[in-house]
Length: 398
Image (tube, rainbow, N blue to C red; front, side):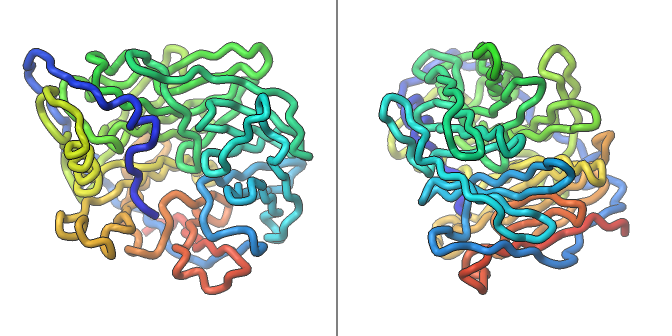
């Protein structure tokens, strides 16, 4: 899977001139404890694989995967962007049990582009679809019929409103009748980035929209590249805490989105600091700089997804390892990111880290079961065109 590059939202807002008084750059925090120094007790071991049947209209990739439990039965679902259909499987039998067409979703006759859709299933009669292009949320039943449409404010110049970035690695969540969606905004013209709140909460009953979780001070006074602003999320169902992880920030944030906030340092043994593109926020955006920012994304380490494993009460924090410049400029070598998985206990102590085999797995296609963390093989290693295969990794004590 290609590493993320600037989206249309980013391109709209970043073409501006920025010239500000020079200030001392912020310190990029690093400590050995919790990075290369940790109690290395656990690893993830491949123990098998699982496969789901595919029809001829479904490819080996999907940006939107969701699991849910209803009446004691575990279900797996994926969204096919090409035919705008959600496929629902019984996890115990790996059989297809339902196909939900999204053909009926539209507003004033405007239908979404399937590649900008993502989904979340609370139960079979409560299905949420996010249209990140038109900034709409659809509440559907299991027949794909629209029960309600929520319109989300658009971002724009000098606004602090983030765009919608719901996907597998940044999953939507419904809690207490509120839908929480992670968003992004790359606007270098905003002098105080802490004014940007990256979480959008939609009250499904009252339609009231609120925003939470201010961007940390780390993002002020320097130029970070596009990927480095990304925020990832998971939810701890045991503590009822939201867990957030920024791409450039070694800290993990634990919050209830209403006052409680605690941060925990968890780094990788494969790199120390994540450095910005430029230490002084004094530049003029143009095509040449855009190209250099994208290169920086590939050649700089970053944190990626964070997953709460409710079956083992641990977290997995993904780290993307940097390419060399030679690898970046070689199309055959920059296609797949090098990825490690950091294992963290319930108290946010680092207890393990493994590097996944290169060019074997898709970093944004995965799901959890009691059996382990299931990660999709890259399309070139999917040996049967009629099924989608995931390798299963089990948490093992060394």
